[in-house]
Length: 413
Image 1 (cartoon, helix red, strand yellow):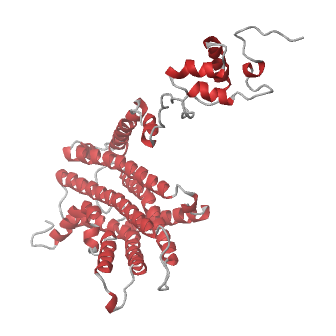
Image 2 (spheres, rainbow, N blue to C red):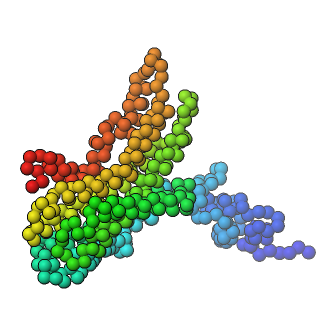
Image 3 (cartoon, rainbow, N blue to C red):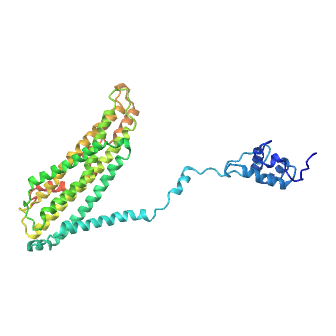
């Protein structure tokens, strides 16, 4: 006995996607990917029962289709294709949502840094410059001068500058060690820090030997702890710069060992990039040290002006003392920096020789000359060392001018 099926009811194997008998994937493709004008005709071809049954069939197959709605369309032969799906956005368009406007926290960061440095400067002026500085009548007379106010304000500004330089130099060292392969071993970091503090002790001992307490009578209470504290803060600010310069020197020594000496071996990959980075970091550390030295010279000059305004003779505190004070720190810092510069230029010269080797006389070409000149110019080997260091040493220009003026007729009076 045959079973009668209602009219407008599709066969069982077509109504159930994935059922036994026939797969619904071809129907899904035809129903989904045909154009709007061909929906009725396609439904009639696939299902003679009518448009209503075709709509039901399309709903079933669409629900079973796991593809996202933006997947590219596949057209069937002889059938009109539907509207094209939108293309994938380019890489910059995908990254654009992450480039949002700066929020309150990001905008407040530089403002907070500036206000923090101002707070440090105010604390330095109040504590180092004026805290219990006028206990005696002579000290009260000295601290009432406008020149003393200027010196105390410069002391506070110097302490704020020391904090800023120490942070900048520490950040530069951290950037050099951000990759594990570039980071020294813990014991090596300990050796660098121990060397920095040993250098600090040597500087402090030399100054104490040549300038013992009481050499310059300053009518300021608590002078025995004010000046050493200011000196120690300046040297602590210079510690990250010294560690960074020694790290640059260590990396240059390692690169020098990797450079080939054989004529047919090319230099290692990334050698030029490492040399350029080492030079930029060395100049950054040099600039930080120059700022600290210049600040120390300005503070000493302001103290001398205050003492002269108080009535001290120029013979008791000559201008040469201020200049020699700054020259001493410049020499000590040069002992750390100059070996780095000499080693860098030596390694850069070896890299040029290994990259663009000098051929025989009959093999010289214009292309070889251009390549070598371009590399030499990029590494600044065709520029004298004073011109290369001029941007960083320009901070010490007043010190150099003052030293020269001491040897001119009437200088230093």
